[in-house]
Image (cartoon, rainbow, N blue to C red; front, side):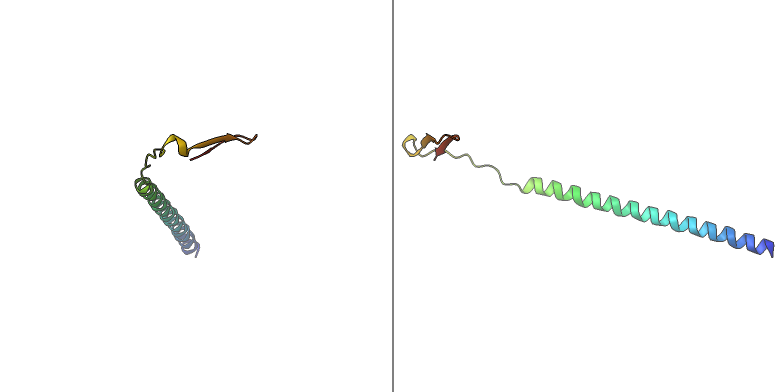
Amino acid sequence: MQGIRSFFIAASGIAILAIVALFTASLTVAFIGVLAVISAARLLSARLKPAPIPVKPRNQRDMRVWNDGKGTIIDL
C-alpha cells in the first residue's frame, strides 16, 4: 500500500511538472509571436510613410510676416 501511494505521488508530481513546463513553453512561443508581429508591423509602417515633398514659395510678395506680440507669424 505504501509503495502504491509513493508511486501515485511521484507520478502526479512528474505530471504537474510536465504541465508547468508545457505552459511555460507555450507562453514563450506566444511572446515570441507577439514580438514578431510587432516588429513586422514597425518595419512595414516605416516603409509606408510618405516621402516629404519640398514646397517652394510662389514668390516673395505672397508671403506676409508680422509679429502679434506673442510670436512671429508667417503667412504663406
